[in-house]
Length: 238
Image 1 (cartoon, helix red, strand yellow):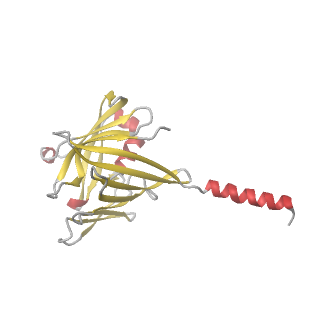
Image 2: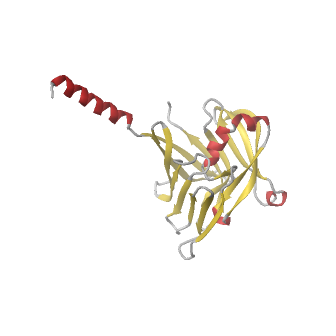
Image 3: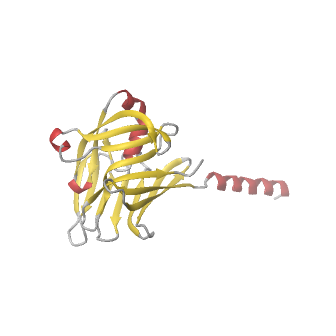
C-alpha cells in the first residue's frame, strides 16, 4: 500500500467520523407558580441529533438546589408529532409512558409506587399529538394556525385516553424581550373546558421556538397534584 493511498484512506475515515458526529443542543426552562411567582423547578433539555435530525431528548427536572426530581426520555425517531416517551418521578414513582406502535399507541400510567401500572391501547389517528410532539405540530402547522384555529387529539396518559383540543393564534407581541406569537390551547368540549384552564404558548417569530408556557404542568407537587405554572425558556446563542 503506497503512502498516497494510505493518506486518502485515513482522510476518508476522518471525514466519515465527522459526518457521523452526533450534535447536541441544551436549553433550560424555569418554572414558576402561576399565582405567586415562586420558583418551583427547572426543565433541563438536551436534544440529540443524528444526520442533522432531532432524534431524541433527555429532560431532567431539577429542584432549586439541582436535585433531580423527574426524568423524561422522548424519542422522535419515528414521528415528530407522535413521539414515544417515558417520564418517571424519582420521588414517588409516578410514571407516564407512551409507545408509538403504528396503528395504536400504548399508553401506560402509574400514579405512584404503591399502585399498579395501568396500560391501554388507543387508536393512533392522523391528528393525534403526543407530549412534546405538540411543539412540532405547531411549527409544522404555523401558517395554518395563524389563519384559523385547528383541532387535534392530545394524549393524556393519566386518563388513558386522548382529548380533542383547539389551538388558536391570538396576536403578536413582546414577551420577555422577544418578538413572539401568542397561541392558546383549549379543550374542544365545552363542559371539560370549564374544568381545565387554557394553555398559553409564546413562540419567537424569528425561529419559532417555544419561549413561554402557561398552564398545567406534568410535574406534581409533594401531594401528587399538578402544578399550574409559568415556564420561561432560554436557549444558547446560535
